[in-house]
Amino acid sequence: MSKRLVTTLLLFVLLSSSAIGVLAQDEGIESVCLVTDVGRVNDGTFNQFAYEGMLTAVEDFDLDSTFIETQAQTDYEANLDTCIQEGYDAIITVGFLINDATAVAAGANPDIYFIGVDQGNPDPENLPNFIGIQFREDQAGFLVGALAALMTETDTVAGVYGIEIPPVVKFRNGYEQGAMYINPDITTLGVYIDSFTAPDRGAAAAEQFIGEGADVVFGAGGPTGSGGMLFATQNGAFGIGVDQDEYFTTFGGGETPGAENLISSAVKRVDNGVYDIISALVEGTELPEGGVYVLEAANDGIGFAEGHDAEIPEEVTAQVQEIFEGLADGSIETGVDPVTGALLGAEEATPEATAES
Image (cartoon, rainbow, N blue to C red; front, side):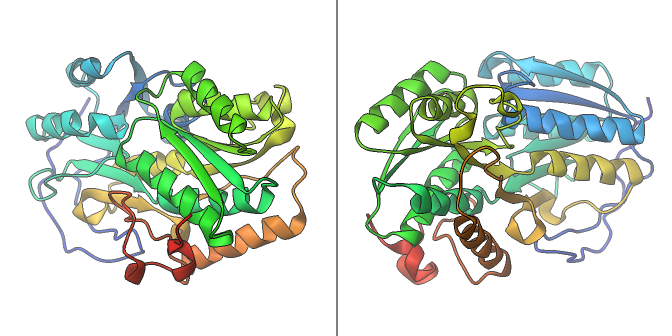
């Protein structure tokens, strides 16, 4: 398999809100290896969407590929090394927590490209072979938070979240801000759980929140969040999924009980992000300026899934769509820092989105 060190940095140009620049490549890649975050490639949310994006690119560009499922965070370095030793031209790593290991590997292997999902490039000048893919989770959360506030009958909505890292914090704060955008007096409940692979703990949290009056539960934390969302939908509350449309994964296209109570999913087009960067590497075209590719409402990188079997008034869907358009054109701000997920000051955010519950 042929590998070439990137040799020339061309002039940077702005093509879109994701700030695309130019990085010359002598020839395209021929193979790709994916390392999951802790969990499996068929987890129904984050890992699976990244894997599906890779598979589409593999098929379109006739690439060799493989994947490695991470069992524990301590396996990150070894899994990366396996991909490196087996000679893959590009390596995809999934999740914020593997960011440091990915950056170290990129620095030690300048002739291999590294694509980090939910990651940033800490040193783009010296790591031109590392492309981070980031998302405006705060915008996706904001959309489904607004939907939750429009659908609740108890004026109490909840969220079950995974490990407290920036992408998850963005989801939570965006969700709560979106709910308060609709109803400043709404009650928002939520908890971070220190695992992405604990659906039983997610279910227990959802049960507690329903007992406290919540009738909508957002699950944002891989299988942990899905466990909370699934419990809610199967026990009379509305549920909201995350990352991809969980109607087709967690609910098997409507076959799993509770599907009629799934009102949406906060969608991150992880598949598009992975595909776009692989495509650029294969074709030798432009890579993101600053080593980061941002997907947001303005470039259809985030969104909200339809309700499928759930009964959602057309006017509710229309209102959420209007909010999406406002996020896309900048007339609505979430009030959440797009990098860290922290809440912004009132002077920096849309007034309705900064109300306190």
